[in-house]
Amino acid sequence: MMKKALLVGLNSYMNLPTMSLQGAVRDVQDMETMMKKHMGMGDSDIIKLTDAQATKANIMMQMQQMMDMAKSNQMDHLMIMMAGHGTIMPDVMGEDPDRADMAFCAHDLAQMGHRWDPKTMITSEDMVQMMMGMPKTVMVEMIMDMGVSPMMMKPMDMMMDRTPRYMPPPTPEAMMEMEGRMIRTIPMMMMEMGMMNMMNMAVWMASRPDQMAMEMPLDGAVRGVMTHMMMKVMDSTQNRMSRKEMLMRLRANMKEMHMMQIPQMEATMTMKNMPMGSM
Image (cartoon, rainbow, N blue to C red; front, side, top):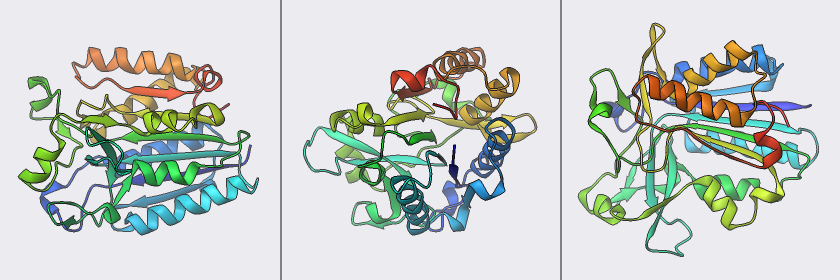
């Protein structure tokens, strides 16, 4: 298989120094190690964008180049990881006032009016539009270690060693706009467009849309909980566990840690029954 990976990790945000994280760049390093160790990938197969490198323009350019290579049969295995703050925004397609869409915050995240500027976020629509027309011979796997909503935040989430990966809307007006809206994830948008059955696709989310995704000290450094648990499971099983089995193991391990976030994975049936990184 001809493989390519894009790993994006953001601890710092150019216009929002008080919203810094500590573990997202470490997640990129850990994922790179995991891909080399268990998926047969080398240095030339992995693109890393961290902190100041991870502007929306840079992320979109690298994603577009990967997608174009896949559509022209130069690649048949794409992996995209995003670790950092997530947020929500009004339905980007403007079709339903009762829905909100998830987005990944880029390094240059900025405010426009009373909302976050979509030109400084990787939106669900950005990612779905890029994948349209992808041949079924190409496998796309996405790992999103971020949160998008504090709706179901629990007291356990407020433990001092835990930091949520969530960027709230920038103003009270923007926050009020989001109240009561159903959050639409990337897999939900793809299902609505009939794309999930047309592609070999797997999408991992660190939590349900109404939960917080956390980072915390793990094995001597701050890391994203889901990414770290993935790494531990892959090491202990030599990546022989199917994606479906891995999801169950991740959920069980996080429950033992008293984590409130429940990881999610949506994929075609074939992909669910194969180990991560394979189809």
